[in-house]
Image 1 (cartoon, rainbow, N blue to C red):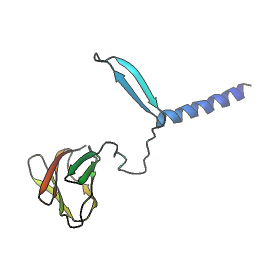
Image 2 (image 1 turned 90 degrees about the vertical axis):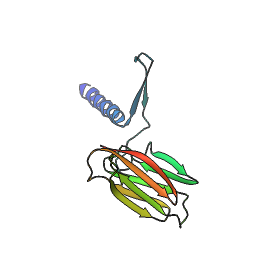
Image 3 (image 1 turned 180 degrees about the vertical axis):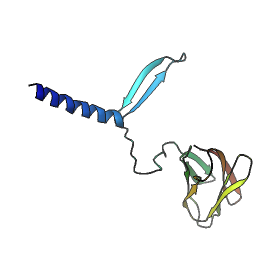
Image 4 (image 1 turned 120 degrees about the vertical axis):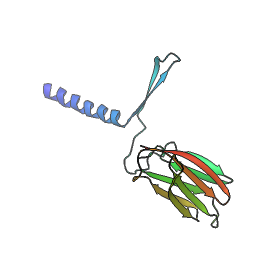
Length: 145
């Protein structure tokens, strides 16, 4: 009887331990800082099959009808820039500058799709990503940690 109870207890221990590792727990606080609610989401599971899984909250913007997505930010080194709704003749230029304005990286491409910007050789800090499409330009703050 004790062995059966131990086996069943271990089964439930592993079962609930597996849920706790894959679940997401969020808290809500009132204006005084007191926790008023705890939400456990057992459906949220982190996968580790891609280094770009941090795409949960990308930077989203538009230049005209062209949609821009930049992720992950903050980054550990590799930054992906996706530009959709581009014409094949659009000249797209991505440049990374440090805080003092020195150009560190420049990438050019002329087809819709994505470009990978590698910041692994740069030190941790704040960088400026400038995206130019034809005569329009947008700037984004990128954090490398």
